[in-house]
Length: 480
Image 1: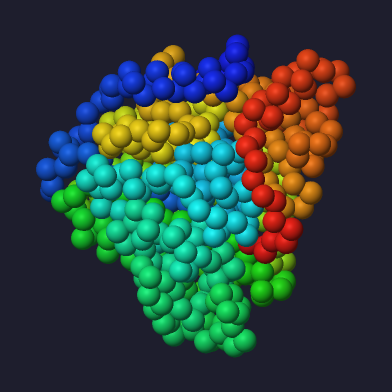
Image 2 (image 1 turned 90 degrees about the horizontal axis):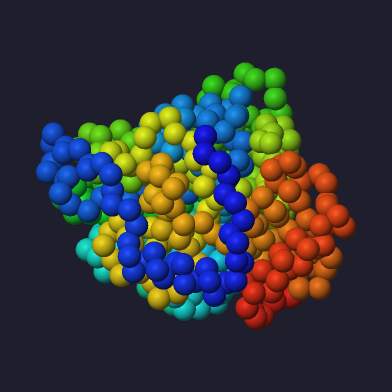
């Protein structure tokens, strides 16, 4: 295992920006292993496909390769064994909308325009990942939950670089796994599900539960792969599993079958949660099998991660399965459990099997990295680093973040920053007292050592102030 990142000597944001620009100008280390030629399609000479699989509210400890013992995830574990398992990688935020905005724009939540659920109509004002990849000749598609653009707004996926989208636009609509409709591009597609007293945005609980949305997303993804064998593609799969249906009360873990967990001596809601995670795992298996069958798996980057930490909603208790693993906290927390995620990258010929990396990175890193891979222009503004050396196991040539930053505009509002081993949290943001933790010695964040390390507190507070830009804080937000 590699040594954890050290604190960059200068924490100036300006210096960090210069480092990023220098890296972009000079490029990252050349790919050390050419992709193997497929026996079916001559794909080795073309740009690699990118498949990005995003879970919704999946905890760091919810899959086997990150320590889960009772929920079975053989396909995700196999993906990990074939690539790199990152142990210190972070979501963009602690709930879905700002986290996804960070992913799509390469900007952390001190800079992007989505900083809490309920911001979905704010203009994105930044080239997005699909826009940049599309400019490099990629076919772009998304199936699942968008969450950063309401119907009729400029933020809908087809206005943000996606050639094709099928799924939910609204976060509350996405609570219901058996909706009466989904969106195909900008048109409503009626499904067989009946949803009595359906909310205007589509949220509710189905009475007949005929068509399971994530099953439909998986099938659409398989069809898209078949249809784009001969063109590089970006396939974004933000599944909604294992998010709860909040409108279903204590029965929010909606799933067609409890499967192997039906006879477990567990509460029904926990059987449902386990079955949801295992169903997500089955989608990963289907996608990998399709890539292999179509001769594309040797020239496809596959990423698996989650948008934020585990939830405590719909009757589910994250302590039941230790969803957070060795971490503290869950969704809406700035503790590690709310933002540190499982993250796996498999890229044949570039990643080495059975590899673990403790590179400290975040969602903002994906956009500049994928732009580099695709030969696309780098965004003019980014908070991310190209982390191809870390993916390839070469941390000697990997630039490091001076710090990672988050802010969140729900509850009392909050901020967090990580620099090397130090982690600071401030609640409420801008004015509250700062908590300080040393993650090397206190991963569970049990011991606030701010009083013993005033110099570190001052340094991290300076980073918080540096990273934050003004943004209106709406008074009332919807849960998602």
